[in-house]
Length: 392
Image (cartoon, rainbow, N blue to C red; front, top):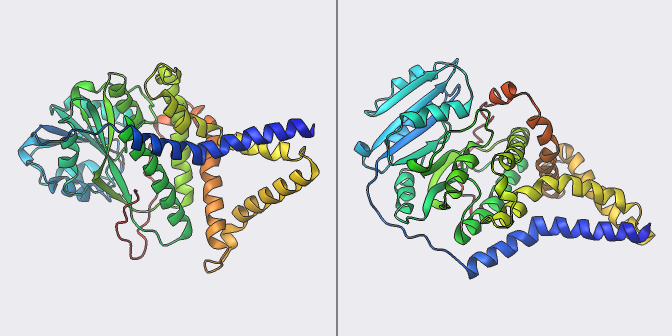
């Protein structure tokens, strides 16, 4: 039994280290060794901005103003706001914004996928710009995205989400997680393609867009992958920025549950992602798929730690108890305590990894409840917030 436990724990530890450290580091080196530069240039192109919204009254006027202020020829941009059954007067507020090429479609509640399909059906621009209602856009963003389409291999160009600086440890740790994610995305983009887009800011050739199935959870992965499987690249453009406030850990957990459930759904929608002859399959498996197994790997390591030789078992169990104990105690640790930062990091890590455990349950919800699950993420402006670019 001790030999079996040692073998399992060793393999388990290797898997954890590979997913969290080894793969990102290897990806970074691969991107440095075999980069595929994007040929950028400026050619004016017509753009249709597609913005679905449900109960976005607090943000819709500010968001449309930020679109009006984009550094891009206004006569080449039309804006389509799709109001998905809002009950807070969003459509009326949007209609009052003085944008000359603005359409507001008021639809009965049907979910984000249906709203996007309705918007794409109305769009006439050569490029579709997808965005959400809450995050204002940096003025040069559209121009920087359009420059990427000078390269004929680019089908989708996605921008960067900039999270304002938070004033709590958990908000700072979520910001650290986003920096880690964007480091990976930059490497994937340099090598070939990222495996999805930033939902609040990405552009796509309209000829590559396809209708979304109802109740699609990750429209910002489904649509870019449609271009990817037509032979095009998905590029991460760090010069295109959208801004957002930090989210509390509970809100980030709910978002992560939905995202992880969406990965299961994407595998069903694009099973070719699992085949070795598919471009970028290895990166999908290492970056997206393997993360679904992280909580199970942690549980497996804990269980088999009890079967290790006595000295090894003591060390492994003490380390795990300390790590999990810090996470549990984090809400009660003083913000000025030297334990606060490691405790907050441990709690944030476990909450985000734990979302993968809940994801299958979310996916098993009825189709109707998944459709109605499109709600605004809870955010709060932190005291003295300022834009902090979470990217390397």
